[in-house]
Amino acid sequence: MLTLKLITEETDRVLKGLEKKHFKGASEAIAQVIDTDRKRREAQTQLDKNLAEAKKMAAEIGGLMKQGKKEEAEAVKARVAQLKETNKALEEQKATAQAEVERLLCTIPNIPYDLVPEGDGAADNVVVKSSLRECKEGDTVGNWDTVPANAEAKVPHWELAKKYNLFDLDLGVKITGAGFPVYRGKGARLQRALINFFLDEARKAGYEEIMPPTVVNAASGYGTGQLPDKEGQMYHCNLDDLYLIPTAEVPVTNIYRDVIIDEKELPIKNCAYTQCFRREAGSYGKDVRGLNRLHEFSKIEIVRIDTPAHSDESHREMLAHVEGLLQKLELPYRILRLCGGDMSFTSAICYDFEVYSEAQGRWLEVSSVSNFDTYQANRLKCRYRRAADKKIELAHTLNGSALALPRIVAAILENNQTEKGIRVPEVLVPYMGCEYID
Image 1 (cartoon, rainbow, N blue to C red):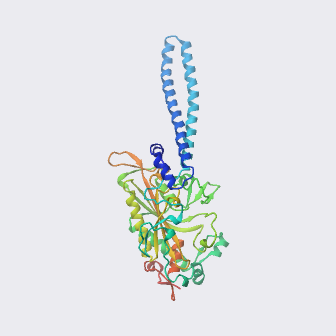
Image 2: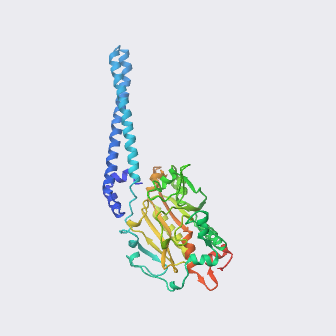
Image 3: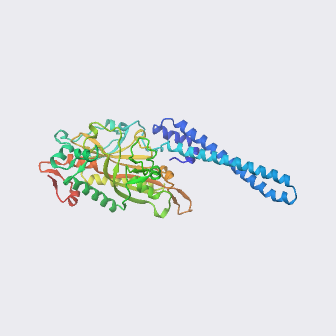
């Protein structure tokens, strides 16, 4: 969440950022935060004044009693007792105001960096790079129509799955419900190959592998901004008040909740493979066929904790890592810088990676790589101690998919069809143990 210091000292910048992010009611929300915090500070000021007065009077009581001024001493005692009652009410006012400030701050999204383009939605996202063609300044998704040849000749991955017995959606419905595929044979092997390939590449890039739980408590969901769950995306285990994770970002980043890290330890680089669970409420239609949108899927996540001075460099390194994975998989891709109106609630800047599906004739998002600035760290109380002066400050948090499997699998199947079968990308052959899926 945004810090009170930022909101109160740079109100205009905050409002301008919220406008770019198309946050409705920004002025009212910020004004309410400032007013509620003013009430909290007024209660604290009066409380401090009363405590000082009570302490002074308490010291007077003994002297009055020694002087035999019992009635005056009793009057002072009564005044102290009255102040205690007033202070109790002030403590309650302060606590109520503090809780309300926290609640209000949770309703306000992060503000975007200046580099984030203006725009209402996906059509306004800027294409900054592609393996298919050179990108021009100002290219947006809305005016970017490059399509590889021979798209009409390709078979979609859900039909290929039946032909080569790779995964079974109907069996998943029988066992669990829609959106829970069962992988089998070489389909299961392809999943495992991609997981191992992505983890090996992350390890080579200096990421420490984490194997976290796939259920988290409410504090962890709150820390990374998944809670409050405004869109109803998380599966909730009501009896134990635990949540199935939508991404490994949640448990891995929460390793550093309520932690102060020495600057010399930064940047921290973690990666994790987990199953991910998303309700995807309201998802239907042709765009969710096959593996395009699932309730359960495998994903490798990369997470960094860094200093404000170095987090931009970390972000660039993460983007280069994800791009390298797509290049090694020989998939057609493009990189988008998301506009203000299409960014997530918590990110300060975000780049999406999309691969092209020849059979479906459309782009499929396979990764988002975000810098959250101090927004998550403020919720997590994730801080670092500066080497120069030992001052403690909020860290920056970053994460990205490297990569999510379902649409990568779809693109590999659809873009590598040959008469021999599905050609396995060269980097996956050692993991698959075969050159073709046939």
